[in-house]
Each structure stands twice: as C-alpha cells, then as structure tokens.
Amino acid sequence: MEDRLILVTGATGYIGGRLVTALRKEGWKVRAMVRDPRKAKKRSQDWDGVEVVRGDVSKPATLVKALKGVSAAYYLVHSMTVSSRDFEARDLLGAENFASACETAGVERIIYLGGICSSERKLSSHLESRRQTGEALRSTSVPVTELRAAIIVGSGSASFEIIRDCVSRLPMMITPKWVRSKCEPIGIRQMLGYMVGCLDEPRTIGEILEVGGGEVLTYKEMLHQAAEEMGRKVKILTVPLLTPKLSAYWLNLVTSVPFRLALPLAEGLSNDVVCTDFRIREWIKVEPMTFRQTVRLALDRERAGTRETRWTDAAFGALMSFPGKEKKHFRDQRVYTTEASPESLFTVIESIGGKNRWFYGDWLWSLRGALDSILGGVGMRRGRVHPSRLQIGEPLDFWRVDDLEPGRLLVLRAEMKVPGIARLVFRIQPREDGDGSFLLQTAHFWPNGTAGVLYWWAVAPFHRFVFPGMAKGIIRQAERLDRFRAVDDDARGR
Image 1: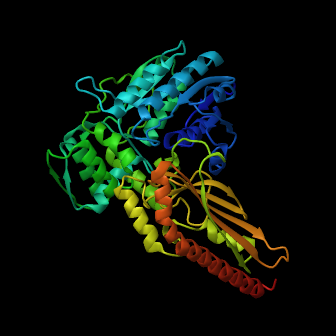
Image 2: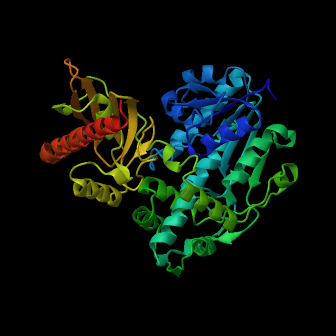
Image 3: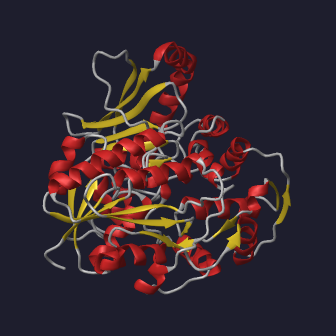
C-alpha cells in the first residue's frame, strides 16, 4: 500500500476533501489535485502528509505532473456548480482530457463517482451528463470503476441542506409530483467506505457498480423523517403543475442552494434512483446506516460545528482567468488614515460578513443578497465558515476569498449575479512613523459588454456612501480593539 500513489481530483470539493482524509487514515499515499493550491491550506491539519499539486482537467498540460507516478486516480470533477447552461460540455471535455492523460501516464485505474441512471425513462440533463462522463473516462485503455449513487446525505451536502431547509422553514409545502419519486440515499460515511474499499477489491476494476444505503424512500418520506428528527411537523401537498424550472426557483428561495445548482438537481428529481445491482455490498463490507441515522448524525455535526466540508467549497464563479490590462476596467479606490494598528485593522477586516455583517449599510447588503437570490444567484445565505478567520477559497456571503495575506491583504471576488467580474480589495500599510495604518479599499469591476457598463454606473452612486461607511466602521472597530488590548495589557502588567 505504501508504494502506491493515489490521486484525488476535485480535492477541495465536498466529497474530495473528505476522501483525501479517509484515504490517509487507511494509510494510503495521497496526492491532491486542485486548481489553486492555496485553497488546500485550510485542510493542512486533516491532510498531514498529503502532496498538493496544481492541475485543471480543462488544461491537459497541467495533468502531466499531477499524474506522474500515480497508481489509481479518483475523478471527482463536476462543472455543475460553474454554470447550469454548459456544464455538460465542460464535464465531457474534462473527462476526455483526463482519460487520455491517465493513459499516457500509465495510470492503472480510474475510480469515478457518477449517478444512478435508470433506463426506464429519459434522463435529466444532470444524470445524462454523469453517464456521458463515465463513457468518456472509459474511452481509453485505462480500466474505470464507476460508482453510481443517488443523493449523498451528510453534514454540508447540498442534498441534506435542501431537505433541512425545507423542513425548518416551511410548516406546509406545496410540492410537485417528484416528491413521489423513489430514491435510495446513502450516507457520506458509507459512500467514502465504498470509495476507499475499491482500492483493495480487484473485482471492482472495470465495473459499473450501484451504491446505496439499502433503504428505498420517496422524497416525501425523507422530508417527513427529517422533520421528525428535527422535532418538527410538516404537511406536504402535491400538485402536478410545478415544472422543474419553477421547482428550482422554489428551492432557490427556500433553501441555501442557488438556482444554477437547484435547476439540474430539480430536473433529476423526476427520475427514480434506486439500486438494482448489489454486487458491491458483497465485495466491500460497509456499516449500514438508515436515512434517519444519517440525518441525525449530520444534524449533530452541524450543532457541534465539526462539519469537515460543505458543498459551497466548490467555486461558483465563472472559470476564467484574471482579466488582462487590455480589458475595460472600472475602479473605485479610497485611502484612509487611522491610528489603529495593522494587526487590529486586519483582525476586523477578516471578521467581515456572515453574522458579523458589513459594518455599514447592512440593509443594503441584505437587499442586494435578496435580489441576487430572486435572480437565481447565491444570495447572502452561505454566510461564512468561521466567525473570525478566513481561508483562500472559502465562500463569504455572495463573495469568495480570492487572496489573503495575514496582516496586509484580503481580496474578495463576487459570485452574485453580475454582468462582469467584481472584486473588493482591502490592503493595509503601516504608516512610516509607526503610529497607525493606511487602509486602501478598492472595488474593481470588469464589465461584460454594455450591460456591464450600465450596471457599474447604476451602482456607482451607492458606492459613494456604502464603501466609505464600511471603511469608517472597520476603522472605528479596529481603534476600539486597540484600546481594549491596551487596557488588557495594563491589567496584566505588561
């Protein structure tokens, strides 16, 4: 085992992040492939001994180094979080690139996590894309193990949060007929058990295997059972009129999942996803768990704050490089002088967002978040992972942390619905006299066409009081923090 190197793609995603940890616990030598290695820093404690390498399946040249010396590779890349319009094409291209690179590198096998595909009726675009991705991975001489699962339930999974949010926010639900569709959910622990177990089970090589928790339920039954575990009661009224698109808008408004992810999921809910092949249960022994048990465990993890990964770990921004100088660019830059120390100033800046709010104009931020949700964006519901610290790659309300240098820099990239690319940058510089700091606050916007230009000029008047108000609020809080620290030092006799 020690001599075999295992590659995990999508290592900063919900499944990938936990799989890396699970493989290490079993003693495997692991290499994690990510588009931005900085995003793996927050996993450093759980990923002891893991090699992190840069790689992108859309860029074949980057796969050469990632696959060097690899025995088996897990393919956990999915573009659905990027765009609901073209994720099928992205997935197909990425799988073809990866399969070809694995063949060239001499990889012995690929393990892929797909979705259960019933042949009785037309598949949703989401499930069809999962099926085609598996076919693309099998297009070379490298054997592929494809594990097909229905919904995966665990703290931080999109499926679990949809169920949890529906139950917690709606005492009565008017739902489409898909709540009668049959599903065989599987807990994240069981899923990881099968995925890791495949490495030591040669009978899984080259096979398509269905994995489930062993319990077949309708979505309506799952909602009722989850409600009981949460100590709630919910009434469900089924109507035949809600289309997948209307269902997606409904899920977008009620749950923490944005429209671009809710749409392909809603389309797939009309398909029964139940295991008909049980071979893997004989080959790999995994502790069984009922749906109730997985929900109970997920709720306990959420309450205890021990959730390892979340579906929001996957970036929702468009996969595009940083705009070059030749692209039209708007900038709103402001510089403030303060007596606050750089340390206190950065402490306050790093605490921004989520339940801590934005230090000024919170109702405007909430209004922008609500508008984004209505338009199918991520809104403000994602909050922040930790109340006081940030990591590169983490979601922050409708932003994502693009860059962070402790004590001096925070760069946020907008993931709201906006006709262009927007970044908000906080930069701290100590004053030359050593007494205080400079705070540079810059809003960047690269517009997409005329719509982007009009958008910038429409919101520019709000910048004139929102951004100064926010900066001054940060400075006031930082100066108070300095005073508190000074009093505390005096009390300790320093």
